[in-house]
Amino acid sequence: MLVYILAIEPPLHHARYYIGWSSYNDYRRRLQYHLDGRGCRLIAAAVEAGREIRPILVIPDVDRNFERKLKNAKSTPKLVALALRTGELYGRKVRRLRPRRNRKGDA
Image 1 (cartoon, rainbow, N blue to C red):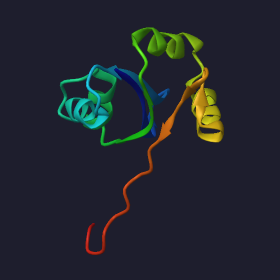
Image 2: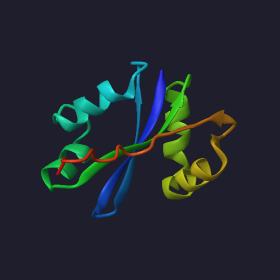
Image 3: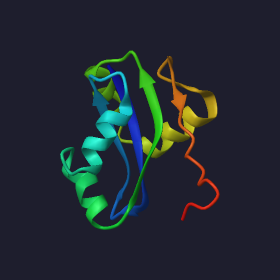
Image 4: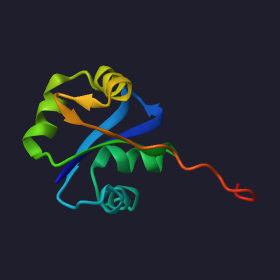
């Protein structure tokens, strides 16, 4: 299992980030569910409103309790900044995801 953090750009009302978990070892499959409208309502609303959804962090080999710990902290922006700066979150290694660059000729 893994936990992932998605960025919503620009923010949708108060929401800048979404923390989720997946039993899949590949967050991209779960992200596609969200983008297809089969995930959480927040991401579906953000997509409907034309917001960009970007995966920014993946924390592998954790369970739903870890996801709950992050959500209960109620300080996702601070957690994201800490994870991006240190590469860790609550003693767990974090994989930073870099946005894909447009190839020449892409819009």
